[in-house]
Image 1: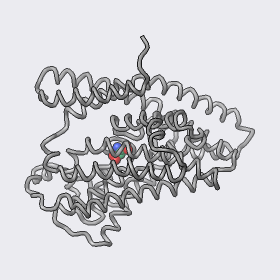
Image 2: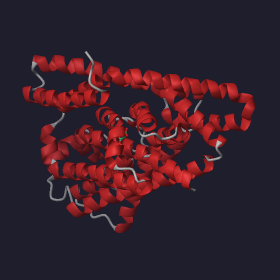
Image 3: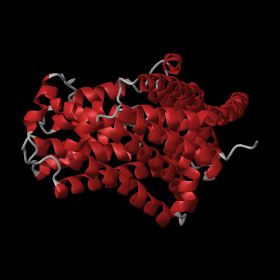
Image 4: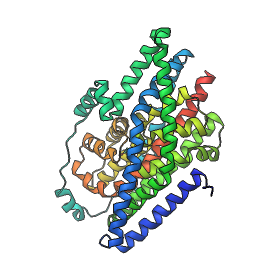
Length: 411
Ligand code: ASP
């Protein structure tokens, strides 16, 4: 019997995951079927993420190094660098403006009685992370012994090393052509393994969604419904209207064409809540379905997975305004500008792992004197919101690689 296409299988997996999750939620955590079901989902879901992480390290190293080397051969490296960084910063800025405008307009959190959260606040001790420390930590993490970085799966440090290695390889020229060829072949092999891992994607996604939906705290969501709605609404607006519009304006490509090619990555990001874990799938979609040249994709997509997070930036800025409303503080225009910039830095610094935004959120709150303990309120609903913002983070990288490819050829 011939199985339906991978895309259809992933859709079926998503549908079953949500449906079974809702049913488990209804049965309650104590039910023996739910306990067994959660155990199995945890096992399969983790296995899927482990497999993605397994290919992540060789993929990042090879794709960036080979990408740089090939760009240099075409004398495009400078243009691609500048265009990429400009695109990342502009799309993140637009996302933050959308999140902040919606928060200022709808004012989620104002009038909510804070006493109901006192208990949660008392039990949570926020990690203090002033911006100066954050900067120092970020800079310090850039240059690490490459073997340690590879062994620990430290994506940021691997990206930095790969950038340097790529430049060294092209400057070395002919002399190192064997190493370049080796890396090229390693990249092809990794892509082949990724296509095998993807066969497990429908099951993995189903398992991750069952766990997510079953363990979601519904009571908290109802209390904070307005905030949740504003965040989901604005994030979807950015993902479904703004990014496709940018894509259309720059490349003339239709959103439907884009989503058809991008959906494997968008759904994987939704289910894993991790841009890093999704990276193998993102790269596959961008090169194979969306036809971005490997040298552009190999450079833009891994860099975007760690630096370009529209969804996270939007969330952090909007959440800071929400907390201000909650504690009854009116932020001045200058403070709002501070939120804007710190949210941008926080999204750049957040690693592409689940709930990473929560850690850098502390920094945004503290930058304008809001209580870091408010994280206790944001945390319980973070699993849900992280799904959508991670999809939009990944979507931004995919749109970016298409736009950058177009711009670089135009210049
Ligand atoms: N989970 C997000 C990502 O991997 C980061 C975040 O927590 O906002 O892209």
